Image (cartoon, rainbow, N blue to C red; front, side):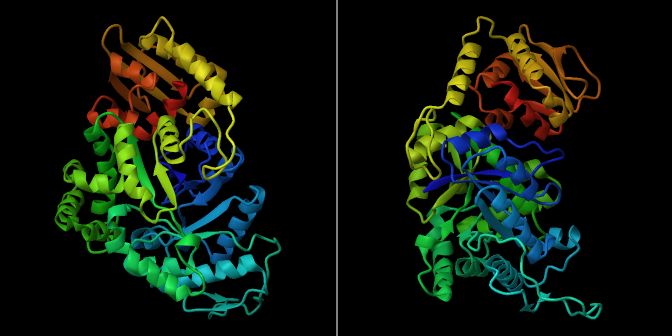
Length: 486
């Protein structure tokens, strides 16, 4: 089993976790995956990431098929693949009817037929064996509809792309899973439970292999689920960090009676809990919906707790047919710990992609360790010292203002504590004592917790779930400050 890293999609502003991504690249993670919903797209961030990484594959999880014609998808994949030295993994999916019809303005149609046609067209374009002609239920190329000019002609890509760019599909419904195993090179499931694979998926996957014929099987099919990982000594707090995500998808991601995630967890045996979560969420009682998510469900689909507990529970995942575990992580330490547990490597040393190859100590890691040691050994360890360090980082990185474009108000309780402003919006940026009106994000913490967070002794997501970090405004903005602590 190898590792991948999920970068997801943005909130109101986009800021990629480049420190985590570059560390994953250095440690031999197989792939970095970006996503899209109805805001940021999946491809532009990958181009940005590809320019700042060396070996990690660049995957979309997923590109929405209704957002692009098959030809546009193939063109995009070929272009980025050549620019990145052959690193693209093309993950596709339909999304749900609410986004397809409500955002893209396209008919949802019959997903199985539409997916089969889409993938076949993309493969034909990549192969460049002949000018493209396709006659299907949803796609006709050249177009010959009632408003056609009649001037369309079969074409072949000018760009000579890689014919074997791997195509992945996101699927959780039984028929979609069978289709994925038949026509795709890999599968991107969400809320995957390794202990439920045999009863939920195995027959469907192997039916797809049989339809594909030839030598199609587990040996040449990448099972690559996304797996949230929360590293924390407090297991309950770690679970609580996952529950809002589950409540959103099970309760609110789709209409009642047309929610794929609701159906999935019901197949896992949590039908009653799913019904409660959905009723509460759709009634606007989101906190109660989150509280209704069972601990047992979280443990099925995520890895939560201290390193030893994660290592113990990792055995079930390694015993399943998974070939790539795509973790969702919230800090660099989690990326390093997972590399150690899965690849058996010292995080201060470098691996080739997929966890194999020679390891060598890097100067960059030595520099990071040196800076962390200097900070940890500082005789002044209170909040004031942390903010002074943050001010130095701002001065050293003037591009932060343009990249973050936000002001932060900190209220630190305790002795000495105090009010602090991190201004990454005006001029070259500034960190200072004081209070500012209309901050974009206000963060309240106890002095000891703030210092522990800055020194990497407190997991941010777990602390947020425990109420140790209180955020007013856009919480996604708060994640942009993490790099100032290092």
